[in-house]
Image (cartoon, rainbow, N blue to C red; front, side):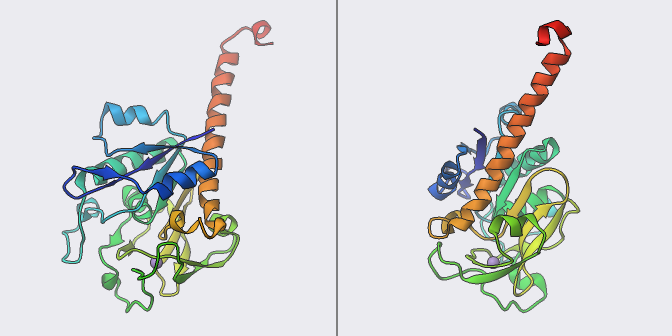
Length: 257
Ligand code: MN
């Protein structure tokens, strides 16, 4: 059993926090135990979450305040949720430092990159290229509308069991400079980064699409949640092993048996 914390959406007034059920249902379906994380202020309550969480799922939502990557807001920047930004960026940095498995979805992938020192284009139109792919789809959430090409020999390709797959798309912001801790592993046909993985040891994964909205019709997208849960279970077990090892080391040999 692994406890997977899922960050929530907030409205821009900061008075309401919620989560679409598709996120926690996906975690529940793959055998994880989801818990919803409200946008706590950095401090003792947030710190106490860290030893409890076996995995972290960063959910989708609105735009990240561009102050986190040193830019002024541009006219196309959408609604900003300051408490959520602060909570997610602080929590993500702490989780990365502690090696807690992380999976970021849409905004969550952008939060992951920004928290680790990368940045994003505040709007797709600013990427310098005339975008040839529609990334804000006008179709049901479960319907995949554009193709992504996945890097071979990547975790993303292994998990999605393919090198080419169609995904849904609900974003107007895209990754720009990747932090050295992440590498791109999937792209849309126009070059927009659609998936990233950590370059280090721990499980760090991000996707620009919304697997939680597609997995009810295409079970292959559940694999992403399964992978997060597997990594979270392994982490919990290795924590137990470490604790047992410490107990054993602290005792005379005769008592260990
Ligand atoms: Mn897209």
